[in-house]
Length: 163
Image (cartoon, rainbow, N blue to C red; front, top):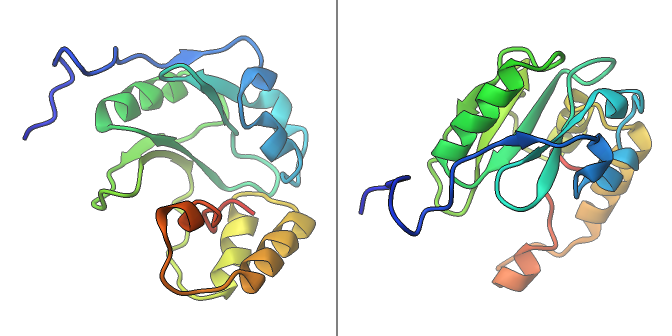
């Protein structure tokens, strides 16, 4: 089956910048974790379907960012929106080859591709999270049992880029 954005069941493909970053559903998440809080004032809330999510620009210790999208057509719209915004250099769509992982729009430097426990710290610093937020994430992750996961338990683990 081929993806068809013109199909009747496909939602309208839009990406809209909201009036205030605080309108984003995940604003509080970033507010509690970002090292350079002034970046939140320069962030934008982007809505692709019904819910706006935050796009945080590069600056200070934050060298790159990403915005997950449900399909490539939304990713292209988000990329186009970011092209017009200051603080989002080189916005690009990264396609996910995995069916259980979202595609992402990235900007700034390319994220490091490392593996292992030290990666959480490296990625956290790359995305500009505070040392305290990184420590909380790594401590929580270290105390989470590894092994087979049910869909409900898998949701408890967050991205290594999200302390």
